[in-house]
Structure formats: structure tokens, C-alpha cells
Amino acid sequence: MTSPTSHNQSACNVEAIDLVGALTWDPDSLIVGDHLFSSYCNLLHYHLLRCADIDSSKLIGRLISVLGQDELRAFTNSPNVAWRLLEIDNERTIKGICAEALSFLEEDSFLLVDSELVPVGCSRIQGLIVDFASSYDCPSRGPKGERLERLNNSEANEALNVVSQSLDLLKEWRQDVLRFVHIVTNVVVLRADKDRSKGFTSSSFRHHAGLTLLANPHIALCDPLKILDSLVHEAIHALIYLYEPLNSDLCSIRPRDFRIASPWSGRALNVDQYVQACFVWWGLLNLWRGWRGPFSDRANQLLERAELGFKDHPVTSLLKHAGSSWLTRDATLALLEIERLAER
Image (cartoon, rainbow, N blue to C red; front, side, top):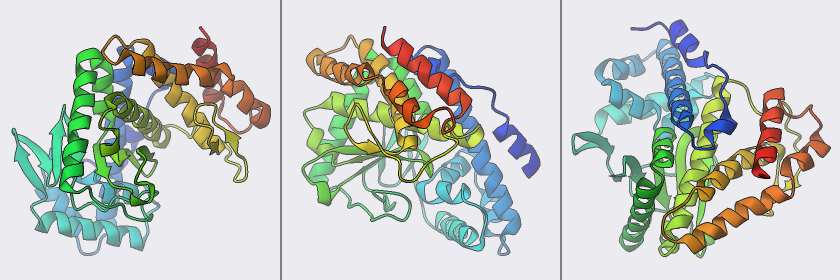
């Protein structure tokens, strides 16, 4: 078995990544995504080995010894485990992982579909695992947030149909982007948000890089490009969530009371959210600039929304407030490059 020290070194030894270039969807974007995801998985595995050393019941060690490589990766990347592995090791963290390990060992957690492991309550669509009815109690915000409801059968069928249509469009017209989404997205979770029953939203989470939540996706039944846009949107967030634990955070300071309006959504964002938004909308701008598929009117609407935000010079606006102290030097240079290229 590889020692924890060597896992830590291999996980954290990530060369400088060109996030700006990757989000132009050139061939390097796939290399960047694959490199970061593999390193992130190594980091989770390293933390799992550390937890196994601390676990007095030896349950985690037994799990590691009986699972194959694919099953072990599925376990460490599962929603209830990944965020715990990224926490500081403490008794509560170990107990939580032990509980998940016991459940994993005792339950038949996977089905074999077309020779691939797929969790129960999930489907595989264009290579992506889509969770429409698993046992995972997906929170709306953070690992301890209020749990969302599962879709009823009719809603689940409608949601699966529109997700499938969206991914089919991506496969036919932007295979490069689909491959990127597939690399950095671990699971797409479909749930019902009854508090916002008339609206579709998407989310992703720093505590679980690669989990994309689509809330009320059945409402977007007639708008497959909106689902497509959301899948790419959250995949870009995932790329940053993979990047930061392996390199350094994009923001060196996160003032609690600071808010700045997003030029794309109008929402009041903190500095971290705003920086991420600049990267996300840069990727979406390049997605829709290169779109040659159907639904051209809708694609143009999505392109115009991305372009409109950059016309407000979002990076320059942020730096007037933040100066250079709130962001790392690499993040500042990358954002200025995005703003310059977006104006072309």
C-alpha cells in the first residue's frame, strides 16, 4: 500500500494551471480537467488513509482492503464522504466516515449497468451519473443545510428527458465541452425545491467538488439549452473547487461584509463568488460564441447575457474595491486577461 506521505506529495504537486486558456475550450482544457480531478482524487484517498490510521475500529481499513479501485474512488467521491475528508481530522469526522463505510459495506450500493458501476437510484447519461432517486439526502446549501425532496415519478421522467436532450446536444455540437463536463463532474443530482417550486436553479459546492445540483429541472422541460448552460456553469465551478485545494485559493482575503453586484445576475456576491463568476461567465461566453447547433435564438440570448456582463468591466470594478490585496497575484493577472479577451 502506498504510504500517506507519497499520496500527499502526488496530490499536491500540481503545476501552474492556465484556467483562462482552459475555459476557451481548447484541447488543453481536457488535460487541465483530467489532471486536477486525478490529483483531487489522490488527495481524498490520502485523507482516507490518514483516517484509517486514526480509526480504532479498523473499519475504514477493512473498507479499503475489500474495495476495488473504481469502488474506492466512488466511495471517496460520494457526497456524504468527500466533504468530511476535506475537513480537519477530528473525532466527529472519523465517526462520520466510519458510519458511511459501514453502510457501504453492508448495503448493495451499486448496480452493474452495461458493465459499469452505477449507484442505486441513478442513471448514466452520456457517461454522467445522474441521481434522481438515490438515498443521498441532498442539501440545498452546504452539508448541514435543509434537505431537498426527491422528484415524483412524473417529474423525474421529465427531468431525465431534458437532461438527456441537453447532453445529446452537447455531444453532437460541442464534444470538447462535454468531455470536460464529464471529467470534472462526479454526479448530477436532480431534486425538488418546494420553496421555489416555480423556478429552476443549479448549484455546486466547494465541500464536494464535482457535485452538480439541478433543483426543479422538470420546469426547464422546454429549454434544453438552459440545462446545458447550467451543467457547464457548475462544471466550471467544480474546476475551481478542484484547483484551490491543490494550489492556493484565488482570494487571499475574504471580507465578510463586502458585497458587489454581479453584472450578469444582479445578485449581491461576496468577493469569492464574484471572482468565480468571472471565470464561469468567461467559459460560458466561449461556449456560446462557438455554438453552431439548433436553438440558435436561445443560444444568442445566452451569449448576449454573457457578453453584457463583461461590457461592465467586472474585473476593473472589483479591483477598485479590492486593490491587489484581496486576490492572489495569479488570480489578478488571470482575471485581467479574461476581461481583455472578452472585449474582443
